[in-house]
Amino acid sequence: MNAGRFDVAIVGSGIVGLAHALAALRHGLRAVVIERDAQPAGASIRNFGFVTVTGQAAGITWRRARRSREIWGNVATDAGIAVLHRGLLVCVRRPEAMAVLEEFAATEMGEDCTLLGAAQLPDCVHPGVIGALHSPHEARVESREAVPLLAAWLHAQGVALLRRTAVHEVETGRVHTSAGLVEAPRIVVCPGADLVTLFPDAMAARGVTLCKLHMLRVADPGFRLPAAVMSDLGLVRYLGYAGAPSLPALRARLEAEQAEWLADGIHLIAVQSADGSLVVGDSHHYGDAPDPFQPEAVDGRILAELSSVLEIPAPDVVERWTGVYPSGPDIAFTDAPLPGVRLCMVTSGTGASTAFAIAEETLADLLDLPPPDHAPDHAKEPDDE
Image (cartoon, rainbow, N blue to C red; front, top):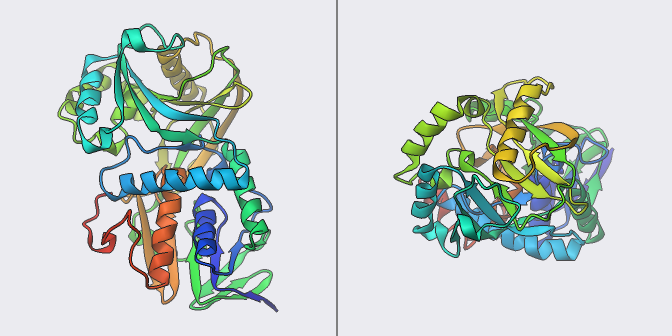
């Protein structure tokens, strides 16, 4: 049985797969997206929906984030996806963290960002916060709504969607599926957290494992956030701050004061939904098969960090969930396991922030076109991820 012939076949309908479908559409190619689940259920709908530029690793990752944010702005309008708020407020409680922000603001990546003193902060910020960095670059969508809306819009534009369809094997020009044979001269495999079905040796060679994170929804606190919110803990996790001379001093103080938070890989992100509730997280625990359990102690530390930054002394949790995404030494990578086939993975928590730009690079590669402007000569560039 033949399920059809296309210009591009994409395996996986998470944000990375859908980004490649968009890139194919913009090249005028007939694309099919093959997905084993009946509806979005993976990491792409379990996150913050936070398109992050500030704090991304210097070099190609930062450029990808800037380009992806631009594409998000366009496709959100086209697909009817609401941008719920914009910008980022990194609120800090320690002088060492404020020094890191000051050093970051003086770099190229800090352009258009503004340093704020305690007196300039919104009333919703906890009085223990001594200052903040405001970035205008970020955007927030509701992932569990945005991903289905993007898929539906792509389908309306002519992208074929094969759901509840398992992929058994990929070879040059052919994808063997439970719905029959899909033929395409260009194939992109975007497997998300599935490390064993397709090209497992390539993933193992890259050192890919899985990361589990805790997420919570907190009831409307009675105020509107002016932007997404982060805290001191984010400065030691986000690679964009890694070059700040004050970072070692901040890390040493955090290790003395919040060692358990660091051990759980916690850094605060709080974003607001249309109903006023906050999506809050997160933590990071790694393994080949992370357990599905959500210890209360980890959630408690996340909520304590929230209450130390925002005026929410007793957060009312109305929903909890975990997410799992691939993680590895690279922030993202694209391999060519077979002629005409690309394995594309975002092996970090940056899928929503970088996937659209990565997809442009993949399609340019498959079509033998020059790299996009955001990634000049990126194939020859040392790995800055």
